[in-house]
Image 1 (cartoon, one colour):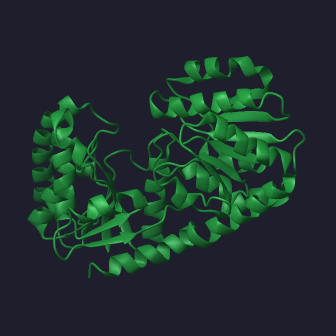
Image 2 (image 1 turned 90 degrees about the vertical axis):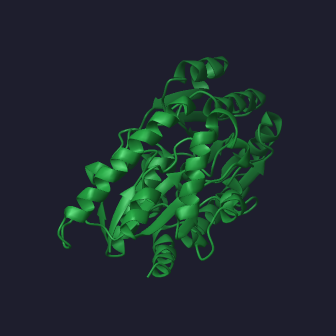
Length: 368
């Protein structure tokens, strides 16, 4: 098939590192691995980033015109033209950045419409978010198939699907191979090296760093070092939070994705409080690298971090409980090793691209 991959939030070639970008890249790799041609024509592109709700009315008007141009171009192309697609595949549609184009285009052209990682939040139906919410509902109502990555979204999505539409689970996935290879020669550090990866943005990300700083302070009497990987507009606030810890916390800044495996391999324990986290691609990368995880129990995190098997989950926002879990693993190298082995094994079995490719192939057969 020729698949139009539409990524309203962030395209695979975005220079901004994020889990959304990595998942979009991963889906493109899966489709190509399965023998499909992936296209992203200019007519289907939208401005990256999340607009303010008051901009949604203008976006909806412009989307109608953009959809009309895309439909007209598709109809004018010869049947074998490389931009003439058979399937519209949207990755990530939600009330803040819905798919304005896919439902209109696929209805007009009589093509299958697939959405991966959609969500539905009834509390967004009123007020300034209502236009984006309605657009997200229209996308769900038009979909022939929805692939759900976060178990938290299953029930809300199901209630908006039309009769005959399908919903399947697609567990979040990564290409585990480079992380496993880099970790093959891991050596234990003394003192242990703690690692966190997260963009330094305001709101939820900053709140996660706030919990992390409080937990570090509670562990001040233990032997450890930490490295924080990431950057962004809230970096000054994060640096201020960590300043009392002095040289024990090092800022590595933004790091190219292909440099991450070596950094995970050099660490002993992965930490992230995960305030309002969907599921967190970095959790999969850390576990593929054989790192045990301490994480906040929120959203889809329990679907990617198995409590007591690959890490420890703590109540969301509870810095004392988070610190206690880290302290327990600092004191018990054998438990760190057990959880690290479980983490690597679990990613290989459930969250590697090979398993995801099989699941996607099964899903696509339902559209034929």
